[in-house]
Length: 128
Image (tube, rainbow, N blue to C red; front, side, top):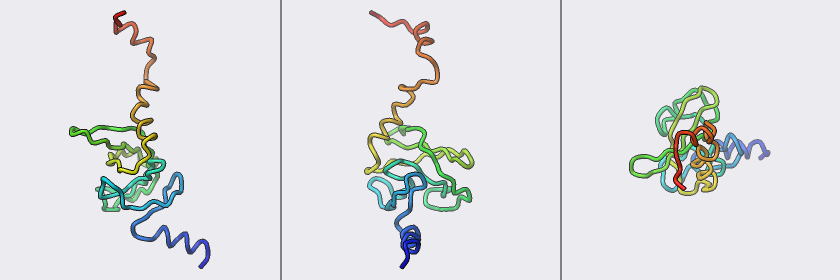
């Protein structure tokens, strides 16, 4: 069996996929979610679903993790933006996702605000 045949067999095997960004072979079995749809290493996804697990999207482009959102009961979800069609999708995080990258996404609006902090200093008075 050639190297290409082995690679194709891994990609086509049910229960796994190759990350479109970091190229890691990823198991679809994940703690905390029934439909693994992103890489636990780099958090990227591929636009394959219209609804979770249906694999009906014709797009197939890479989906960049751009933010973290918190649902009403405290569950964290990744927000992905499709690089092909700009669709935004919320995906449950999994128990084995890279915690450093999750926290980096969560604090990104604070670390890189969309406006200069000097603007806030004129609006908000800070007690001494």
